[in-house]
Structures are given as C-alpha cells and as structure tokens.
Amino acid sequence: MKIGFIGFGAHMREYLLPTWRTFFGVEIAGICDIDPRKRQEAVALCGIRNDIVFDDYRAMMDTTKPDAIVAACYPNEHFRIARESIERSIPVFIEKPLASTMAQVEDLIEQAARKNIVTAVGMNFRFAEVTKRLSEIAGGHFNTISLRQLANKPAGCLWDYTSPLKSFLHAQTIHGLDMLIYLCGPVDKLDVVHDNHGDCIIFTTVMRFSSGAHGSLITSNTSPHFVFDFDAICRDTVHVTARSMWDITVSEIGKTYVNGEQKKWRDSWTPSPLASGFDRSGFRGEIEDFIATIRANRGASGSSTAFATLHETFRCLEEIEAQCQSNPTIVKELAS
Ligand SMILES: NC(=O)c1ccc[n+]([C@@H]2O[C@H](COP(=O)([O-])OP(=O)(O)OC[C@H]3O[C@@H](n4cnc5c(N)ncnc54)[C@H](O)[C@@H]3O)[C@@H](O)[C@H]2O)c1
Image 1: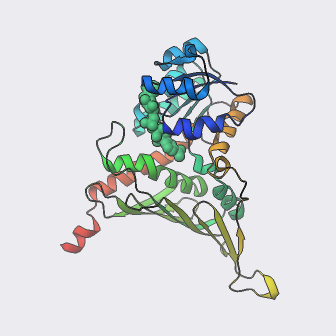
Image 2: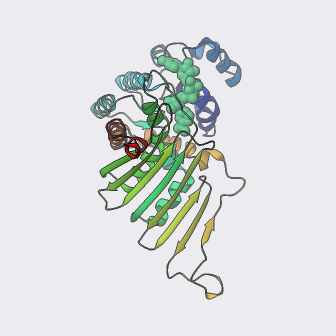
Image 3: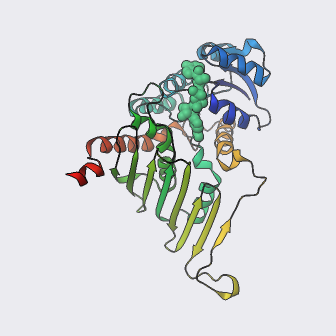
C-alpha cells in the first residue's frame, strides 16, 4: 500500500509516520510540506528520493497516485485536503480536528458518501488500551463516567483561529469528549460551567446521553501535567478507574476476593513494560482500522473513525463553545 503523507510536522514525524512504518507492505508514495526545511528533513530522515517530495499536495496526489492519503496539518487545510482526496477517489486519513467548522464537517460527510470513499480521523483515544478495556468491561452498559482531561496547552490561539477557547476545544477537548461519545453514544443534554478568563480555560461539562448514561468532563489548559484519568460505574455495580491511560482498577459489589473477603479489594491491570506506546495511545489501532477498511473496501462509513462518526463530537463542541460564550463565569456570578 503506497501512502502520500501531507504535513511533515511534529505529529507526523514523531507519531504518525513511525506508526505507519510498523505495518508490513506500507510504502511512502510521497511526502508533502509547504515548508522547504521540512521537505529537506523528510528526505534526510526518511531516506527518500527528492522527486517524491512535494510542496503541493494536489501535485503529489496526481503524480504519485497513492492508495491513501494521510494528513496532519491545520484544520482549514484538513478540509481542503480531504475534499481534494475524495474528489480523486483516494481514501483519506485526516488528523484531528477534521475541519474548523460544523458546516465543513457536514460537507465532507456528504462528499465522502457521494463518492463512497473510505475516510478516517485521528481519534486515537477511541483505540487506546484503556478505552478498549473499559468498553469490554462495561459491555455496553454505562451508568456514569467522569473524565478529567487536563493540559498546559494551547494557552492562546492555534492555527488560523482567533479564539483561544476554540483552539483549546479543537486541540484538546475533542479527544476526551469524543471518547465519552464513542463509549456512551449521542448526547441528549449538555451543560457547561466555566471559569474561563483571558487565555485561562477551566470548565466542566455535564452530559446526559440518549443511552441513559450520564457523564462529566473536567478540563483546563492550566495544569502543569497532562492528565487523562477517569472513573466509571457500569453494569450498576462495577467501578472502574484508570490513571494516566496506564493503570486500570476494577471493583465490584458482591465479588469475593482473596481470603474470602468482599470489601476493600480490587482487581488491577497494568500493561507489560514492553508494550509499545503506539498501541497504548491508540495510534496503531486507528491506522490498523483504516488499512483494514481500505483492504475490505468497506466504503465511506466503513471505518470506526469515518468522517460521519465525528458529527456528534463537532455538534457538542459547538454547543460547549456557545455556552462558554453566553454563560457568565463562576467568578463573575459569585462577585455579583
Ligand atoms: N492525535 C493526536 O494525539 C495529535 C497530537 C498532536 C497533534 N495532532 C494534530 O496533528 C496536526 C499537526 O500538528 P503538529 O503538532 O504536527 O503541527 P506542526 O505545525 O508541527 O506541523 C504541521 C505541518 O503541516 C505543514 N502544512 C501546513 N499546511 C500545509 C499544506 N497545505 N500542505 C502541506 N503541508 C502543510 C506545516 O508546514 C507543518 O510542517 C494538528 O491538526 C494537530 O491537532 C494530533
């Protein structure tokens, strides 16, 4: 399978391309970046010929005729790249955020369906080890999940965005929110309480899902560490916690543990020290799913991260943004 890679930035060189290279039979059809320094680095780091390095992705698509496109650039570019790939009937994998607006996302879903082209988005948290295990333990019956997703960036505007809030939503919140929607299904009701001021973003979103489950997402760009921890109650009596996408503990009412004891014990799971980070973070899973969908020719809605599966996530992101803009902050409310 020959792949055309677009955007030779940090994410492509450190995560995406190295993960792609763990799959047998994958070849680089071409690499494209608008920055000449990145193109030189691509030649040096990947050991490829100069004539398969491009400054224009349309030229790369037309010259190298790749079996698939993988892009990690910026949201408005993602929209344009996805459209050009679909128009040429080339399966396309786009990093998050798929696009910068809901209107663009809807346009892409429509175009992909019209041409029945395989699409995928870099929602790696759907394939992370902790997500897969939580999903198996819950067996489709979630009561509640509380996710704390804290970061220290972005603290300002990213890409061509003019809003720090939207930058944060599309760079960080998208992952946690999408994971909750992936596990619990569409959202019926969503309420946001926030303390956003200046470049400081701190908010809690409470959600009621149509499945009957409820959940919360606590997030901020003011944490010195990246935190991705959750607590879930599923199947009424099973309590699951995960810390740092690494350790999972499970405890259950009525279960008998060591010495015949039922209380104060829990099962714990830790990945092997040899486990690859690409598996744990879900980068390998998202690519495996995309490749399998292309090989089986399963069409526009075939992959687990097909463009259409991002619709609910973008709808909720827009709702969170609107509520943050219209609701007063907690600080102001207390002061008045
Ligand atoms: N899934 C994840 O966990 C994860 C993590 C980090 C970044 N990302 C996403 O990956 C994307 C890239 O992030 P990054 O940190 O690598 O950014 P970056 O700025 O380091 O890299 C982006 C690259 O795209 C190139 N580019 C921009 N427009 C282009 C165009 N039209 N044609 C060709 N090249 C173009 C830029 O020159 C740059 O080299 C972002 O959308 C980001 O949200 C995802």
